[in-house]
Image: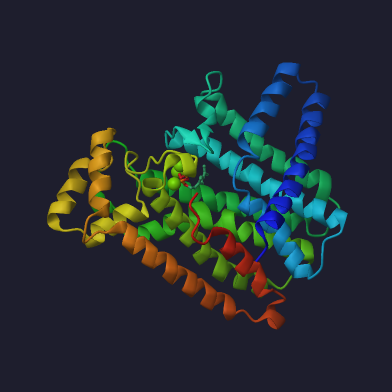
Length: 354
Ligand code: GPP
Ligand code: MG
Ligand code: MG
Ligand code: MG
């Protein structure tokens, strides 16, 4: 595994590409004759909403291409992989800015959510569209001449559609005005998290790098999907767990799942293993917009036999074993894939605390 210093250097190199990307986008708005205040607005939005995260998705494009190639990338190869990585981070910015509005969240990446900035409010909706639009500007500018250009477009379009489907079922399962916990189940949770998170966060980075590397055999994409979807599900279960259990100053965001009546992993575990008394606490307090109700739900989450921290620890270990098993089954010769692509991605997220 890469040392801490090597990881920091890889991150710094990747971050260095963002300035060029932002400059290109701002030059375009300038060339369109936009006034200085519009250019400044877009610049502020780009820098506030795109570069400050963990960058797992973006870095995974670079790491995947390098592993597939089996040798260090040339300057040009690096730049193009990093550019695609930043396109995923732009997609992520688009999703997060709008998700925070939809979830009425307070903080993100250790700062107030963009829509909560005094001058922003609902303009954040348009700002989120502008983050998405940037992807297709950059893809056209840098990849228009490649024979895999359409494949890149399709990957971004299809994963965006899938993510919005996931967001839709996330939202309509979490009715703000009518809390009915009998609508929740781990099966429903599975569908929500695969669609809202796994496709764009796990499949997309690897599939983009596979396209750039020239892999055309559709069965290789299917083989990648079969591992990356369960990996993405595991990642979103972590997100749900951390929503209730991570200190906000570490997580960079304040959890809202209990207040928002979300069909999260935690509540499904509590419904599955809770006693009738604990179920009553959930029915009376889940999805209520006050801190006392939220605290009552959190208290029973940790009580036996619900015992979420213990059950999560077990789930985390079992997921790691299961995913490692799937990775070991990959036929590298037949698919042209490398097991290390998936090992590297799993290592980025296993036992994460934020
Ligand atoms: C994670 O949900 C999923 C997304 C951020 C995708 C949103 C999709 C859109 C089409 C807007 P979450 O609400 O649990 O994330 P977080 O905990 O980071 O708010
Ligand atoms: Mg959400
Ligand atoms: Mg959210
Ligand atoms: Mg969450």
